[in-house]
Length: 54
Image 1 (cartoon, rainbow, N blue to C red):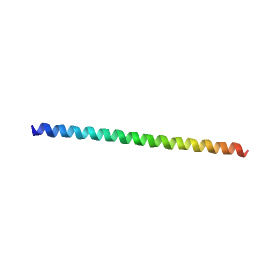
Image 2 (image 1 turned 30 degrees about the horizontal axis):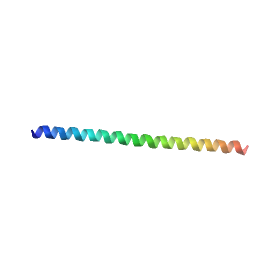
Image 3 (image 1 turned 90 degrees about the horizontal axis):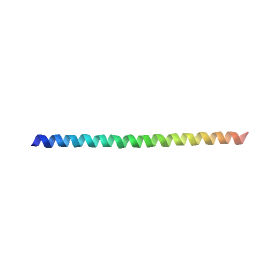
Image 4 (image 1 turned 180 degrees about the vertical axis):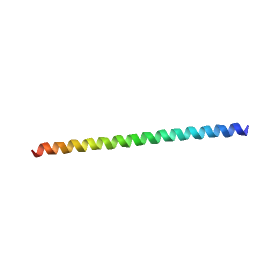
C-alpha cells in the first residue's frame, strides 16, 4: 500500500516537472519571438531613416 502511494507521488511529481518545463519553454519561445519582432522593427526603422536621408 505504501509502495503504491509512493509510486503515485513520484508519477505526480514527474508530471508536474513536465508541465513546468513546458511552461518554461513557452515563456522562452515568447521571449525569443518578442526579441525577433523588436529586431525586425529596428531594422525597418533604420531602413526608413536611410531612405529619408537620401
